[in-house]
Structure formats: C-alpha cells, structure tokens
Image (tube, rainbow, N blue to C red; front, side, top):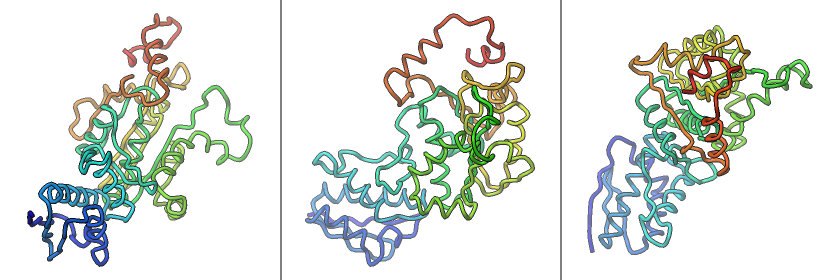
Amino acid sequence: MTEKTVTIDNVEPLLIYGFNDAYLRKIEQVFPETRITARGNALILQGEQTAVEEIERIVAEFARVVARNGGLTENDVDTILALFTASNGAGSLSLDAHQVILFPPSGKAIRAAMRGQIRLVEAARSNDIVFAIGPAGTGKTYTAVALAVSALKSQRVKRIVLSRPAVEAGERLGFLPGDFREKVDPYLRPLYDALEDMLSSEKLRELMEKKVVEIVPLAYMRGRTLNNAFVILDEAQNATSLQMKMFLTRLGVNSQAIATGDITQTDLPAREESGLANVRDVLCGIDGIEFVYFDRHDVMRHRLVQNIIDAYESRKPDPAERAPDQDAAS
C-alpha cells in the first residue's frame, strides 16, 4: 500500500474536485482499490503504487484542462478517464498537453494529430499572429477554430470572429438565389461546420445571438477594432494585399489572429496578387508573427488527396499561369 500527497497549484482545487468531490469519486470508481482524500489544495492518494501514480497523472491532466478551458465538466472527466484506461491498461493512452486542444460536447478530445497541426498549436501559444499555409485537407481551419473555442472557454478572449473572403469561384454571386445573407452563407459554411463539432447547438446559437461568436465575410471587417478577440481569416489566399492589410490591422488589445490558406488555389482575378503570398515577404521576421507550413504529409482526407497534391506539384508549369502564384508555390 502506497500513500502520496499531491498538491494542486496554479488552479482552483475545487474545479478539479467537483461539487461534493464528485470528480474524485469518479476516479475512485475507476480505481476501486484506492482512496482519495481532499484537504485544501492537497490530495492524499492511498492504494497500489501503479494506481496512485496513474491517479496523479489524471489529476495533472484535470489541472491542465482547467488552466486551458477555465473549468472542468463531467464530460471532460469521463473523456480523460476513458483515455487513460483504454486498451485494458491504465495509462496506456496518456494525453499530451501540446496535442489536446479541446474537449467538445461529443466527449472525444480534439487534438493536433499531424505534424503541421502540432506546429500550428505551438505557434499560436507563443505568437499573436500566425499564418497557416498549406494544401486542402490538412486541418488548418479546424485546428484554428478549436484553438479559438479553447481560448473563449478559458476566458483568455471574450469573443471569436471568423471570416472568409466571399470570392466568386467559378460562379457569380448575383446569379445565386436568395438575399445577400443566403448568397454568402455557402462561403462561410465550413466555419459553421467546425463550430458545430465543438459546441452544442444550443450553446452555439446563444453565443451567436449575443455576438460572442461572429461569422462574417471579410468585407464586413472594415472599420472595426477587435479587442479581446480571437480572429480567424480562412481561405486567406483569396484576400488581396489590401484586404490582408485591412484584416491584420483590425487586431486590438489582447487579441490573437490566425490566417489560413493555400497559396496554390487562389480564386482571385489574374491581375490580383494573393495577399497571403505577398504577406510572407512583408511580415517575415517580425517578432510575434509566425508562419507555419503544411505539406502533403499532413493531409487527413481520402488517401488519394495526397496523390492529387503530388501530381499537381510535379506537373510541368503552365506558362499561362500568373507569375505571383508560381513564385508562391515554389
């Protein structure tokens, strides 16, 4: 029998214990031969050494989630316990603080699974502005939205603003049915989809009604100053250089921005240079700004997507293509 005292630092212990120590009792249900006693910010663990060590790691993960999200839900607790006790072996699937971004209502942790996603998470934690550049299917937007929701839940920001350029990709807005809102919604749909994975329908509706979460076309960002906000520009390759400057200068006090895009797939007219391609030269080397590059190895879609990307990258350049995009893709 082993006894160990674990001290809870940097977070409120009651958030880890749960109401009437409910979360501690859940741990005891998973490890029935152990006993957990809470005394102030100290936990006294009694049981077999392996179980005590495992509980210590679980409590540490509880503390990381509280620090990241500003609280701990019953769903979070169940998810963490399930992960730590997977495959019939306690601790066989431990959580990495750098990889787990968010615990959504579904219970399945949203984590940075690929190298590019991990680099994006690390960059966002140490920089106010991050550019995520790479091919489709690498999880750039999804990871960025998860980081924004995590920042909102942990009260590091007060609102989320998600934006996309409403650029015509092979069809004109004027010919699409409906009013303006209905015309631009298809451009913004991927952002809605990501949010719906991370927040319950009721919570998302409430946050959008209160303007805590906004999804707007890029043109609607002009003239605004966004304080205490997490701002995301998706499909940034379709922003012009002037629009990119406009977006970046919206950033206010205690705010953070991520711009995502694929500079090889711009829908801008031939005479317009992509703001995402241009910004690499303009802002390179500025402290607090980082560029993260994704490649085909980060693709998480159908296995053929990697082959498609390889085929396009290796084909002979078309002289009819615009020089700026060729330079950006090289």
